[in-house]
Image (cartoon, rainbow, N blue to C red):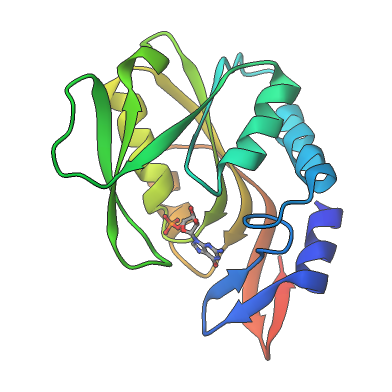
Length: 189
Ligand code: 5GP
């Protein structure tokens, strides 16, 4: 998506070797117009798939997920990150290792919000090593629902998330695909 690539070039900040900060428009301060355009783009990509639920994980996935849900006119569910070790039994859970925070989060979704006949589109802000999306896939599988695909705002193709999802046969659509951070510049595929 051209507008997104331009915004990344303009406002993204590279941290260390492999992290991109986009907190001025995506995951701290949010640009609603850009977010809406992203939602419409995801909706177009998956419009013929009979999606009836959008699934994401708090908090950075929520904004693009809502815009996609709005465009497809379907509900949006976000997995909560649970801090306590005791889990109620009315939830589906998965462990997700966080690439940026280097900690493991237990994510959970109330069983009321995911049913076996749901056709689910997973949305997230970044694809790095695939752990967040794989955690959501695991939850969808536990609920015996169907993963139709994953919509990613920014994919870092130099990490192995795409390969992990390919191995599970999951369709991945990314709005911006970063090849590398060369000399402090973001290069897209
Ligand atoms: P993965 O689970 O694919 O390894 O990493 C994806 C998750 O980590 C995303 O939900 C996102 O919150 C976070 N993440 C991964 N890479 C980056 C990055 O370069 N910048 C930011 N802001 N978040 C990232």
